[in-house]
Image (cartoon, rainbow, N blue to C red):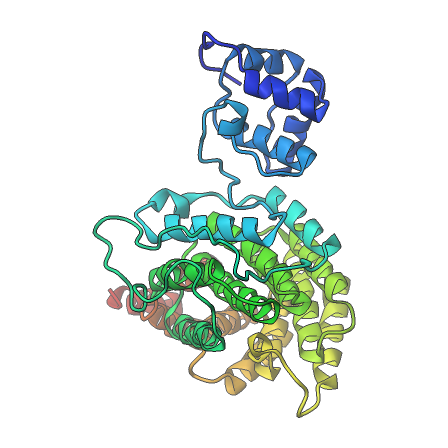
Length: 479
């Protein structure tokens, strides 16, 4: 790695911390390299590199943040690049940290909200990092609920919610001052806002109101998290904040801001731990698994689904168990693992059959019904090229699925079109594909567009056939 020219003064801050941590120069270099590998970076530092840092040279890129993270883990307190006498940077992995405390979790996630709600377009261009899934999922699995999340009459440090110059003040912002008490009504409002944005996302895609959601988190949720509240209220507050943060990640994923989405999911996972809500944590991991499937990282997706199952155990409602098994099935399907996929689908089906009317189902899992499970079956059979079964399940899902789930219906229609194509039914496939393409123009969803493009790639071998020419004419007319 190329270094900047040496400074005139030695880095005494770094030297002191090396001594405190008990590192040798070679030991520090080795740990930085290992942490880099966790985030997909091949760094190859050695003891000579550390000697140069001690003499005042500045490592480039993400390395200062990686060095700071090494010391944070060793010494058990949060350290920044500046604390080490190194230049600060915006590391590609920032936001993937699984915070040590609820307070630190609030600092990390609120930093994401503030940056995302502004004009920091580069935040939405951060790459997805498969290696960045390992540490958060492991820390969640072995972690315990935080002993204390309440914030009583202690002094409260609050980041101003005014934000940037020129940003209009949000409704209610003037009334919420530093340390203000959080009420049950506040948390009910967070829940209601979550349902509103979820409905918009289902019907119109993640790009429709994503920025409004992030601004709401910045201007309303953050002041609540920095307010005063008892233990019970605090757990409910962190649960609501986790749900909204996962939704911010979900809508980011839908517009192909995959690195940003990954960071929101990690922070939602940490907030769920603060809420002592193990079941919701498993749902966040399932969401992360779905993103990994979409991006073609099947092996990581399998591991995330299994960690979710292991972490929640057998205590979760049958609907949640079904959801988690279905996520694992999708991962096996994208890997082409027929036996493992089939076994997971069977477990998902049995779990859903075990659900009884009157069972208490978390609000976030109520979408997972017969229509959703049929959709999961359809996707899996399509990926395994079992087109007859894929068509049957996709048709059933479309029959059962409510119109409000417009994007899910679009996805399922594309699965059905691909299955019909695989069965040689070109006319029906093109008709279904055209319907999906028309629906995609009505929503702000990169995933919807990508589903249609995937179908069009499957049409390539038939590009000179009359139904395909007709399909292209219909799509071109959509403008």
